[in-house]
Length: 170
Image 1 (tube, helix red, strand yellow):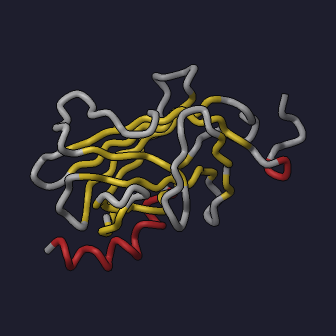
Image 2 (cartoon, rainbow, N blue to C red):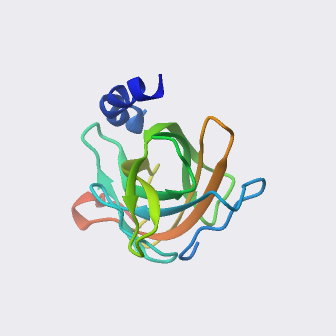
């Protein structure tokens, strides 16, 4: 059943998308055998540490987002449940929640360790056009059908390209 869902996910992922430091630490209730490292990248995983800069992108359906990718460790499934949210570091109670089942392909990380790669998730950023230089918090939790889970959180500084900024930004 899961293997049949993978091709459908590849088609549906773009439609669903618009509607730490180094190693990720297990979150509350997470099993240390399972971990995830949140990074950037549309086509490949790009490590992006806390306080690094992430560029705001204007998506084809009109929303604004930052590209995210992640490496997961310890999971055996080709499909994982992803719950990701974005919000401003200085307003932690205001979050934009996204989620769905995502493909997790076998890969080797930069150190040669076995991992699973999920790449190119457009994490939507609400009201980001006038937020150049503001700290964006991205929270990620992944899980499998067996209930195994791992979480990572990153704090990135948002870079808003000049051509996207409205003239009336403060």
